[in-house]
Length: 465
Picture: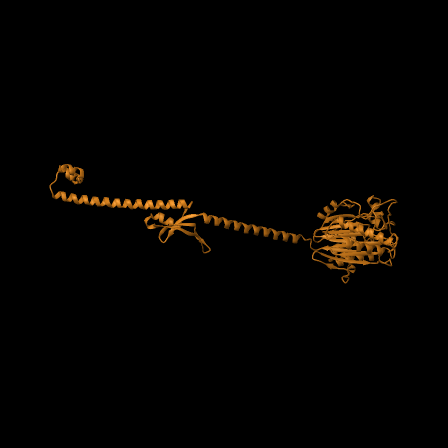
C-alpha cells in the first residue's frame, strides 16, 4: 500500500475493542459456495502459456518445507515506491501478509507490529476464531504504539492470515490483501476485500477489472490501526493434498488479473518459483506498489497418515480380538478337558480317564483316574475297539456305572459259559448211561428217564421203614 491509501475511521462515539463478542464466522464470502467449487472446480478459463523469461529459479528468498507443506515468500518494493511498507510472516503452519499504510516510518511500523503480534498470539491449531482474535490484538497493539509515539498517528495495515492443519485451513482477514486457493487447476479467491471499489463491484456498478484501475481503488473500508472495535473476518475451509494457497498484498492483485494469477500458479512447479513468477509479473506490469506474495503448497494433507493410522488401529483391534478369542477358546477347552471323562485302555485293562482322548503338540489331553482291573479281552470285540478309541462318558458316575455293567456283563457271560459247560457235561453223562443200559436188562421207564435211577433222600428214608 502507499501513503495515499486511507481507511474508514471509526464513527464519533464508537466504543469497544477487539474483545467484543463476535459470531463464529464473519466471512462475507459464501463459504458453502467456495467449498462446492472446490469439490467441482469446472474451470472454463483458458490462457496463453506463461513466458519463459518470468521464471527465475535462482531466487530462493524465504522458501521452506516441512513434512506436510512447502512454501515460498517474497516481498519487493516495486518500481515506483521508494520504501517497502509490506511485511509477511512465515512461521509454518502459520502464514500472514500485512500491507502497511501511512507513509514512510509508519506503514512499515504498523505491518511489522501486526506480524509480530499475530506470530506471538496465534493459536496452535486451525481455529479461525482464535486466529481472528490474534489479528484483532494486532489492531490494538498498533493503536497503542501510535499513542505512545511509535510510528505515526493514523498508521495502519491490512492483514490476511492463514493457519493450515491437515486438511483444514483457518483464515482471518482484514483489508484488501487477499487469499487465493488453487484447487485442481482453478483459482478461487476466498477472501472479500474491505475496500470502496469492492463495494462497487458487489453493487454491480463496476466490474472486477474496472476495480483494478479505479481511481479510488486505494480506499480501504476496514484496516488495523484505525478503530478499536475493528473485527476480522474469519472462517475455515477444507483443503486437499495438491492445493496451493496464495496470500498477497494488493501490489499483486491490482497489477495483474485473477486469470493471469491462475495461469502462473497453475504452470509454476514449486511454491518459490510460483512466488517469483507472480512478483515478476506484477513488476513487469508496472510495479506501481509494493508487492508481497506468500505461496504455500499442501504436499501432504495427513489423510494417508490417518488412513495408515486407522489401518494400524484396526489391525491392532483385530489382533487383540484374535488373541482374546484364542484365550477364550483355550479356557473353554481347558474347562471341557477338565470336566470330561472317558473309558479307555491301560495295560490291557479297562480304565477311567479324565480329559479327552489324544494329544496336542505332544501334550496328552487326559490323565488316568482309575484302573478297574477288567481285562478287555473279556469284553466283546466291538467294545474292545471302542475302548481303544475312547468311550466318552457324561460324568464320573456314569463311567463307574458303565464299568459295573461291564463287570455284570462279564459275570453273566462267565456264568452262562459255566452253565453251558455243565449242560454239555450232563449230556455227555447221559449218553454214557444210555450206552450202559443197552447191555443190562431194564424196563421201558428206566430206559426213557435216566433220572428215575436217582432216589430222593426222603423216599429213600421211607422205604427202609
